[in-house]
Image (tube, rainbow, N blue to C red; front, side):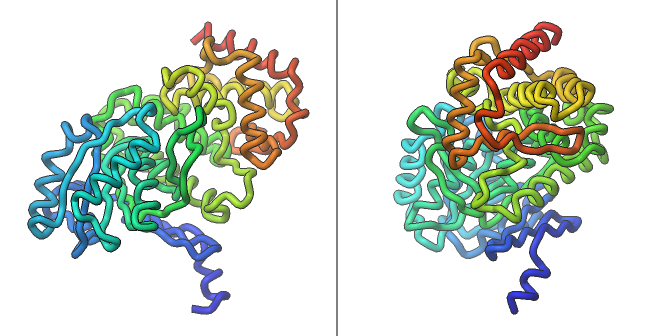
Length: 388
C-alpha cells in the first residue's frame, strides 16, 4: 500500500464489534467489544491465540470469579497441554519489576516460546505487569488483554503503554507495546465493587471534561451509571464513547513524541497523591482529586469560568469520588508534584486544565502556577472536601 493510501486510512474506525486504530507511524491494533467472552461458543479469544502456546495470568480475586470459566473456555477451544493459567498478586504495591520477573519466570517454566502468547485477565495493574513482561520476554512477544474493570476497558485496555512503579515513582519503567488483542466484555463489569466502578468513572469524566460536553451532560444526568442494574443503552453509549475518544486522542501521538497530551488531565498531581499516600487512594480516586485541583487552578488563573469549575467538582462529588485528600494535598507535596511533572515532560509543565466543559488547554510553564495560586486552589479544594 502506498504512503498516500495508508495516510487516508489513519485514525480510529468504529464498527459494531469494536474499534480499529492505525497510527501515523504504522502501528495498528484492534479493541474488541464482545458479549460472553468466556462462553464456549464465542470464537474471539480462541481465534487470537489459535495454534500458539498460551500462558495466562490473573490476580486471585479475578481467578476466584472468572478462573473456572477461563479454564473451561481454554479447555474447550484449545489443544490439550497448550495452555496454563497462573495467579499473580494484584494491587499497586505489587506493580513492580519483581512481579514482571516472576511473570517471565513462570512463562519460561511453562515452555512459552517466541511465538507464544501471554494472556492478561484483569484490571489495569495485571495488564501493565503482563504487558511489560511480554515486551521484554525473548525481546518481545505477543500478549492479549481481557479487561475486567471499567478503568481497564476505557483506559488501559485501549492504549499501548505498559509499565511498573520503581524508584518511588509511578510507572517509572515501561514500554510501548501494543497488545495483539484487547477484549472488552461489558458484562464483566457487573461483578465489580462500587469503588472500582467509581474509579473507572473518574477516567470517563476526564475524557468528558476535555473533549465531549454531551458525554459530560449525560454523566451529570446519570452519575450512577454502571452503579445500578439495567443501564443498557446508556452504559453502552458511555462505554463506547469513552473508548473512542481515548483512542482518537492517543492515535496521532501513540508513543508520546509530543509530551503535551490532553489525556494527561488528572495525571499531574495524582502520581504524588498516590505514592505519598501509600496507595491509600486508588488510581481513579487520585485522578479525581487532581481534576478538581486542576479545575480550581484554571478558575484562579482566569482560564475557566467559575460555573464550569463548579460543575466539574460537583459531578465528581455526585459520583462519590473524593476531591480532596488532607494528607497529601499540601502546598509542599503538590509543589513537588508540579516539579516532578515538569521534569518528566521534558522540562515543560503542560498542566492540562479545563477551559470549559468539553474543552481544555495547557498551562505550559512552571512559573505560570504561582505558589499563592496553588495555595488558594488547595484551600478551595479543602472547602469542597468538607461539603462532600
